[in-house]
Length: 296
Image (cartoon, rainbow, N blue to C red):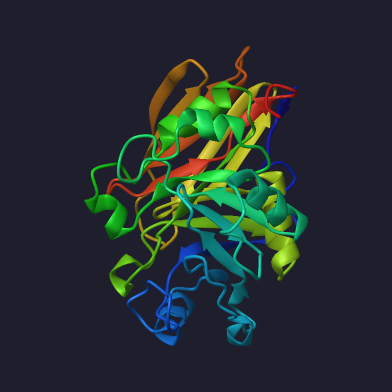
């Protein structure tokens, strides 16, 4: 039996979330733009959730929450390598990495490993990621201009597949890692939430009911009679309906196809994850569909 994180989604809605955002809120911050301007930009773009995750500094933005945009607490733990501690209202940078991850979970949040290939390949080494326990996932796409201009890569699909091959149920997130307004909306996470609060976000993350994106959304992803079926869409409605679909398993790229939707016949794979690419290069990364017990 295959576990599909997108099965039986009902009674909720999809929201865009930015979990990795910096804003100029005073001493110790690294954002170049005032917090009010940053939040206004995301609100105008229709985001449903936003975290101002300054380096080793908690920024209380709860007063900026309204009926459309939920401000989520969080801090970027910056003792190399970095971790997003989402849902946490204090900095944990004095703790070792494993303790910071466990404390984030104890406080009711969830940790995300930041930009695994920033500056160089294996900024987060494969051994570090494999040894660490308790984090929700990694940034498979960190689309910050800062990251893009460094010698590493803004993508970390190699790290993601390595962890999945080891049997680790690690989810993929996309972030724009905003330091100035030019970075806004370059990468984001789209979650299916049934509650308009942080508990709804945390439940979606725990189930894997979300996708990493740079411009595409998920129309559907189903498993019926051992056939995986998937359809992507542009978030802004237009006439383009065809996408390149890639199916990746523990053995590597298993199938590519082009069209409005795509099918994949499931066999004895441990997992299958799907990527979609639009004609303008916009990306969608779905969480893995996996054989029961293959990923933990």
